[in-house]
Image 1: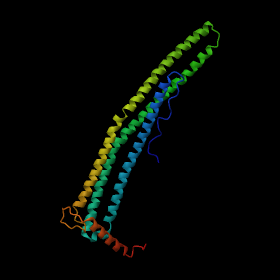
Image 2: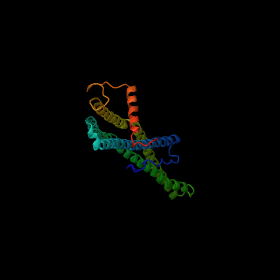
Image 3: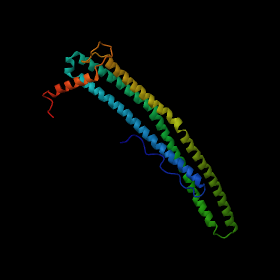
Image 4: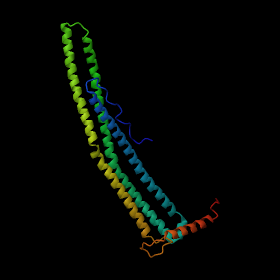
Length: 269
């Protein structure tokens, strides 16, 4: 399934420097790259799963609305006043939950998906910087080869001048490369150090959005249970919280199930 997310930006590891950097320096930049690559993959996963979460909440709201809409359209519901009132209240609750689900989806989009999508572009910038660094290594190679060839030539004035020119050019290019390589490593480490500061607000926003959603859900369904006179088993006046014992509920359930199984429309098992 296409989630609207392209493949990872960070797909090419930094090239070996051919001795321009120490083994430790090459290991540091390679390790930073692998950590950034993992961060990008995590970023993609969180975006995808947040979308799945939003879609799941929306699907739940639609299913509940279809369920209560189906009950509401059933003629038998209107034959009993208490049952009709319960179905209407339930349908009202599912409509409100649908609104809460949409609000949750909008909040997550703004506070989680959008910031993480913006962060994803930074990985592309990092890969671009790595590509520029690697191109500098590539550009160095012809100069190095020319310098090596000059060592085998006769030491004439022209050749000596050419050799010195190549050495100066190589020194300048290597200096520029080392500066670029150092800056790249610093930028990659900075990005890794700041990842929590950037992502933490989005995570907190997601938790708050879920808290609000589930809180609203609990409030609505508690209101439906506590303020409805539709239960045929209510033993106390409206507004009280008295409930039948678990054993009594189980006995009533078993009695109802026996009555249902006795109906002609129920196939024998």
